[in-house]
Length: 537
RNA sequence: GGGCCCUUCGUCUAUCGGUUAGGACGCCUGGUUUUCAACCAGGAAAGAGGGGUUCGACUCCCCUAGGGCCUGCCA
Image (cartoon, rainbow, N blue to C red; front, side, top):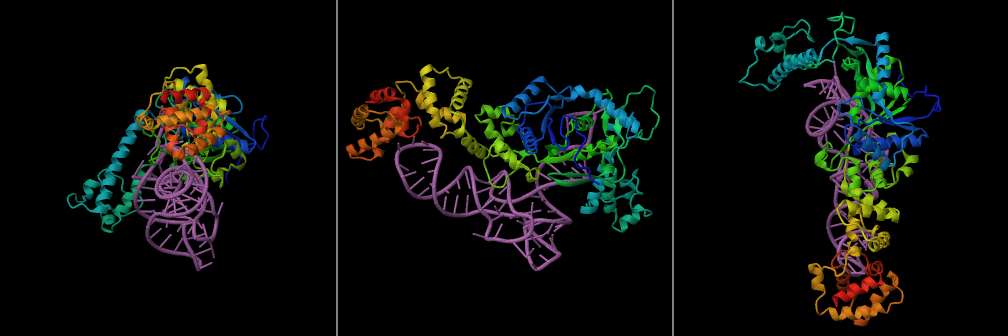
């Protein structure tokens, strides 16, 4: 019978309620893969009216840093992923973990192990030597290498050949063509899960010898993880090691700590990266060793880079704060990230709040998804156009400051603020918006780029001058009437707008991109626009 | 080496035994046009390969290939 949900929740939670958690280890920054995992946990908790907890897995004292903790907390806040309750620090619970290990020893499901790391390494080395020899033998049997003929005396020296094929001698096995099959079977046997010699109470080498506490892994049966995403994952119990639970220094390992903490925190659903998929089986065995009911697991495929390879430094930004600095909005990151590997069926762009009622763990795909910057750009453009004007303006100013620009004067800041509502519809990211805003912020006299210089030739200047006169007479300085005025002027000149627009724009912006000319005129303001034109006449 | 997992357009995905295999981003073509962007219309583009099961398979099973994870007194 498979363990399903837990019903023995702490008192403050209603019996049936879902509890999820995000459990990053503070050894770096909040990775976008981690951010997505957090998002899925948040989404599921919200959907179920449950609780979303945060636990910092800082049991590795050497690699955990306060800076990393800070970065993770900040990243989550930026993404709007608020957790319930106190942040839990795993290391602070070490005493409780030790207690659990003691309990398992008392139950006979764990034991003190006196095998040293040196002995372990020695054993591993010996095993891998044997493995190499048999693999070499198998290769020769399968592919046939005339230069390196089989010599059973030598090839099997010191190897136990009794396995699998009973009474047959190596020569007999070889003559019947069974030797390569035997080698394959032998290879499997040569890499067994670790079984400590102390699991059944062997006496310690010395009364005060240092020891670890290991799980007494079961030898028979199968461990089944009814994974919510991956489906049933079956692992033979004999393939699971006698895992270290408590290190020689008395500190808990990750494997023990997660289980104890997830249990104590009343976690009902563990949603995490599928790099933990095989760990689930190991952890289920620990749950059983404590006679606890395991949570439900959901292993989310990892995110890959654009080349399909595992995400690494080469792929550029990995930490969420880097994405923020690149000019992406948190709501866009949320929206993009949660659609990586999950689909509600129809909507392509939705906010995380809109996703809550539609969220289903079972709808998360099994295959890893690749990052696609173009798609992220378009999602960001969507949310940028929807974003609050004052916020966008502030973000642009912050970006310009970070990039090393001098602070904006009061007039410039006001001009930027006026332009934001128009420009945010045209830009994909904050830096791009800053670029689009260049024309507003430029100071007279404008420096013209080459194209602008060509446009503003002597043939054009008289026309520009007449245009200036016409615009000066405009009673209302808004883009609609200015647009009509431009058309009227073109008509009066007997030409199309194509003969007017580019030159006017060159005069107004010096060659920088800008919106519709009516808009450009309006955003510049009557005085500034007219003055810029006058500069070129 | 061993154990486990994955595989639909370039990318994210829909499909949960019967569809002309749908959408989105990107791309291409055309339109609008005053730069850039946006916008509108149209288009190209997919079930890794091979075996089964079935009246019928992208969907179920097996094999192969390719990718990934774990294999630590890291998490």
